[in-house]
Length: 165
Image 1 (cartoon, rainbow, N blue to C red):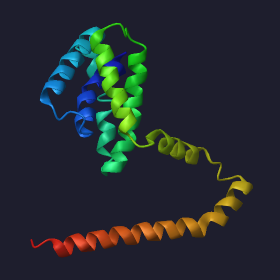
Image 2: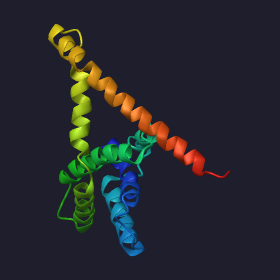
Image 3: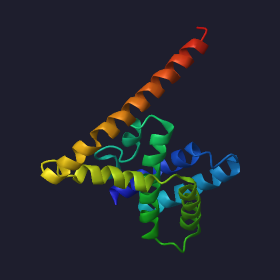
Image 4: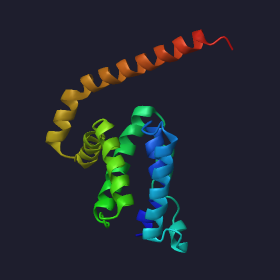
């Protein structure tokens, strides 16, 4: 329960990041709902700080917008899973869940991308069949890498030329 309660802080960050709340009245209402949820979970308990943050530390390593959308997609899914196991008869729980579902629908296929990464970590690179397949794909992978690298260099070069610093 400690992980669940401490992570409530990230809800408003996620929602603001995705630009869901241009209206400050909606954000204020959501903050009230989150405050009620914190009370439900007794998130002011002293053990909440043990071990540090569970989500906000992860966001530091994800710097690009599209990268952040992938990890935030996973975080939103975890919040939804947590809220499904709470008392959904409470209005504030339903409201937070509805807003998170709305955000989830606006996210790209972050889960698919995360699953792809997980699948890569499970590959048995000591397996001869896997090695053969990998060698067959090596040129294509290197080609994609070079294309990506060239594209990034071009973007950096263009932005440096535009800058009249």
